[in-house]
Amino acid sequence: MIVKKADMTVQPRPAWRGGEGAPVCYHLEKDVPAAWRFSSLVEFKPGESIGEHAHTGETELYYIIEGTATVWDNGTPVEVTAGDAIWTGNGASHSIKNTGSTVMRMLAIVITE
Image (cartoon, rainbow, N blue to C red):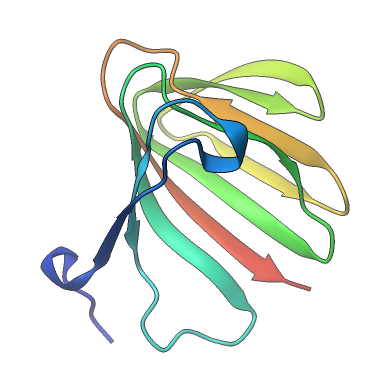
C-alpha cells in the first residue's frame, strides 16, 4: 500500500502532552496492523515540543530525519540529530523539544505489546 503525503491526515497538536507550540503530524496510518497504535511524520518549529509521558504496554520509536532536538530519556537530557533513533517502552518516559534553529522532522511509531 502506498500513502501519498497529499492523502495523509494533517493534525496540528497544540500543547501536545503539555509541550510547547503545536507540532504538526502527518498521519501515515492506512489499514496498518492492529499492533500499530500511531505512526506519523512529525514536524516541529524551533522551540516546539512534546511533553514528558510514559509508555506502558507499548513501545515508541522516534527516528530523527532532519534537524536537532533534546530528548529527555527518563529525565536525562540527550542531544539528538538526523539519523538518531530513540526507543521508549516498559514504563519508561520521554519528551522531545526542537532545540535547533530550523524545522526538525521525525518519524514517530507506537506499537502495542
